[in-house]
Image 1 (cartoon, each protein chain N blue to C red):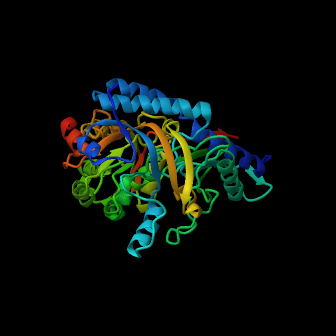
Image 2: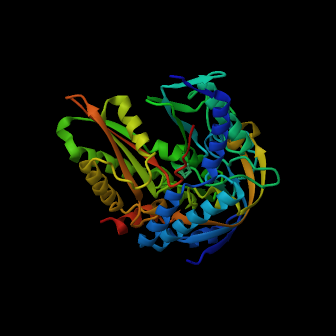
Image 3: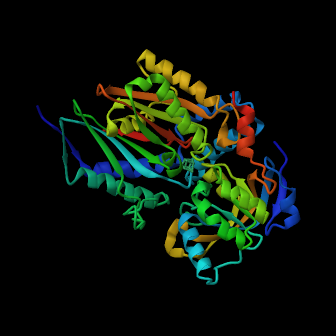
Length: 184
Length: 282
Ligand code: SF4
């Protein structure tokens, strides 16, 4: 097993600056999950200069819409969704101090540049490992837009949540680097 | 001859169970293929991905937490024997009722919107997409395929010209997979349709995914093309989860059909490793 860098949220600038594309990390603390619909609504609030349901500074958003929790369970399956759909919204959240994102798949040029500018990182979790990842979530609570169902904003408490740094603040891009390495 | 009678209530019951089983039990052929592929993977990160995916399948089958939170839009393939008489209500309503009950009982995610523009959730994962084929005889076969959005969004079709030939087909398939990258959760299974017409080719690509994983096309030249494409796809280096490595695809399945003298339609339907399908025969 590769060794993982331990991260606790909210992330500090010094911690973010140490992360490099290809690092495995293990995240503990509070993260927030939401996806397409909640992004659209949050950005509307930001544009209208209205208050947001939570403070984004130093936080991590997990692009994820879980399956429903069974009775007695914290959450259902909880793996990442495709990040590129969130590209158009990302800059707005970074301006509010968002420090990290967890998803799957590559980001647009604009997002990669914004990560350098705003000193934020993009992580990937294993797509389709929804049952496995759900076990790292110890608490889950809908904190906004509950009418969106799976797309509501959730506050999650995670323990040793595994992820990999894809884009760091220096322009490193793991997807690109490794593809070149293994291309025949 | 007497017609065989099937009560549609039985179909609801079967679909209800199939939806739940499909979402929590990765088929044995997929598990075996993942194990086999993980031995071939050279990247250490890639190997880790395989072990997480296998562990995921185990947790899911034991705890009945779905394999993936995207429990999909339900695609239903029906082969209906022409000597069957369905009674007790509408056949399609019975299938949709099964989906409704299965998704509720199984705590599966509702991912279907009533209108693509208004985007309001139907809250019961219906309607399913149902393909019916009338066959001879008196058997009824129903296959349930919950299909996730990530891999479906990475799929595509193209009306090539006859001059493009095999080279054009390969180029299109490779381009499609290269641009999808990590989005469809590699390792993937690649369903390819060749021939037919505009709508038929997409259907063929999806149908190709139903085949047991890695089972070659019965026609030699298509089987060879499957092998060549699998090799060329894996040479792209995308790797498990796009993190680089030897295994991007687990298998390539081609389905072909006669086509017009002016056309060479081709379609690629990408299936993620969470290749969920379950069938029942009445
Ligand atoms: S592509 Fe497949 S494995 Fe990945 S999130 Fe979608 S349904 Fe799940």
